[in-house]
Length: 76
Image 1 (cartoon, rainbow, N blue to C red):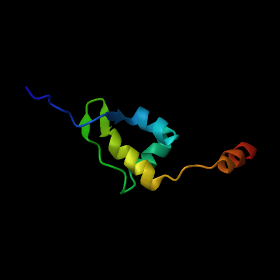
Image 2 (image 1 turned 45 degrees about the vertical axis):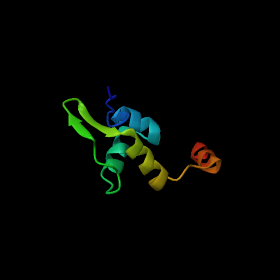
Image 3 (image 1 turned 90 degrees about the vertical axis):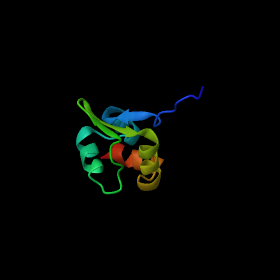
Image 4 (image 1 turned 120 degrees about the horizontal axis):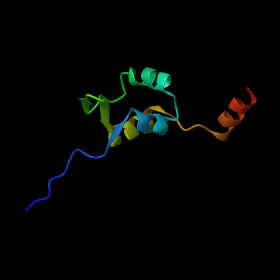
């Protein structure tokens, strides 16, 4: 017998917010970016994405924040 494999790990908006470190309104903006991956599937409760696609987007389009960025945002 062969083991069926699925598409991979799925994530919804809540998980992506945490992965990106942003709020819902900023995520809506990011989602409109042409490079942001299309949802794997649209369900009645919302869209789901392949986690690997979101991780790739983050690696390629979201440079890591430096400690200096954090300190500047604390001073503002």
